[in-house]
Image (cartoon, rainbow, N blue to C red; front, side):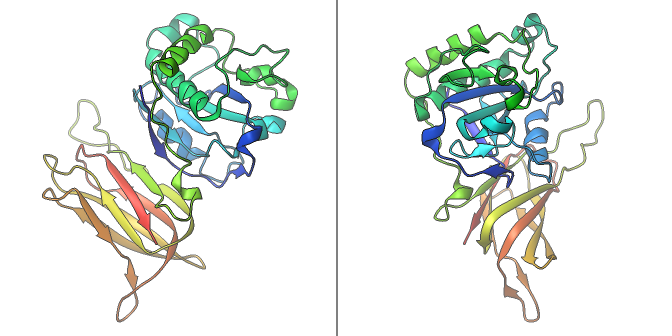
Length: 303
């Protein structure tokens, strides 16, 4: 199983060295466990001014998909003095869950976690072996946040009932069954690549003809860009659209509505301002999903 990774880059990280990475750390969020939008809510929370982050967020509602906010080479802010050596995964769940709860309705979350462990193992060489509390701060392998002790922030997740033996066995099977395609370092950190943003569809409200409110997404680009491309399979869904607010600098924003009609799968948009209108560079974008179609959108930004 090869994971689809949706990139929601955050500025909440520290530069570190991939050669120093030697532990894969499993966490629980202690929130969003029953939310169908859990991994998106978690990773977008880390984009805020919260002083925290994680490499990825995983939930039980998106088999084969995870969200990614910090590249594996850098240090996510979630294990205190162990950040420089850790690659971390936030699982949308609770340390209080029983073993039966984990292996029952949350098995799809565990399967995603196993696929993530397999891909990180193949990308870094970190072995798929369990570390105990006594060797988590010095060993090389897979561990829990709670096993890093007070220096690792002193937390108790993902709890004693987390079925790591099963998850590791699945990960070993995935890694041994052929190398999954592992995405390169997320493009926001490479000036020669186009950063991208996944915009989920708005969810229908059960037993109603209404839809959930759009959740604004703030995306920091890590540089200056000129053009927004919207890609998505609009065919069979109808027109799709977003409202994009582009930051010109000095707290100046310009709003534009951008559409993709059902006859196309992508559209390029260059924001303009002034009289006569001229293109301008932008470094931040705020996105609101306007339509209620079932199409998934990917936004790319070009220089």
